[in-house]
Length: 343
Image (cartoon, rainbow, N blue to C red; front, side):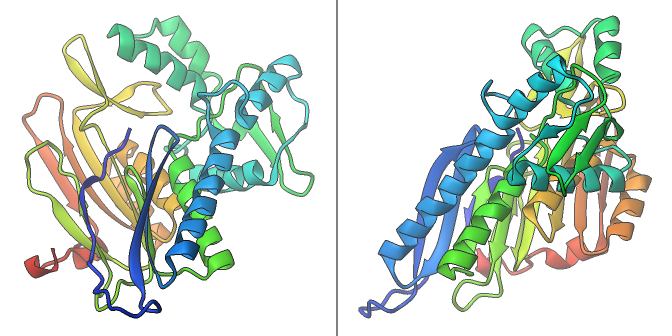
């Protein structure tokens, strides 16, 4: 699981006796195996609480659509139906169609380095992490044969999805939290008019508006290793996500593997790495951290140049510990906070 926050540095809003004075409100709820946090500015604490409750309900509904940890989720039910009737057009919900469309777009843009069809590989890797042993090659090859977004056909008009092979499994772990944050913030904005808000789901954070008297929201990103200095970003109307192996790793035959899988090899990435991406939406930032982790550094630079409105910071240390490469976009450098007083 990703980890971005060493801490959230949140601006304190001065309170007055007036009930109409905007105040800071914080709410937290557990979903998708992590804690979702909302920090908003609003003048009515009752409406703020109601808004947060509805935003969290939106996240819960999306979890039931996307999770592969529940046998009765929409995506797991869909995959099992495909096992019984491979190649058939299967009806899907509007929510699943929406996250599928964005996932397929990002997979195409990243040349498959981000891929939601890695479910068969994810299943094998979870076993390897527990046993600390590699998957037998025959099993790995069989799983790899089921991977590839070109094996899916989404019909947004008819709201159907077609798999071209039985046994395929979808895994939204690389985009789900960012997508859920986007959707929850849409609820806050469209139904309650709340547009000064920060929402965080582990390593996925989206900032809207600016706290009173500030240039933006100040967010600290976790370092490559525990105990190392953090870096602070000043963000306004942007999303940030970090993928790294600070916590979730497997050591097999003396080699350290990340939980981030390479869809082309089926194996976890080796060495230590931390990749931070700033983008216009949570879904985009979330997915692009996976792609930027998998791709060679020169291709990462080309990808972000092509995308335009996205920035990245990447630290990769080879598994032998002898070399460390640090690469960042020029735009990322401009987002760094240089004023210690802001903290």
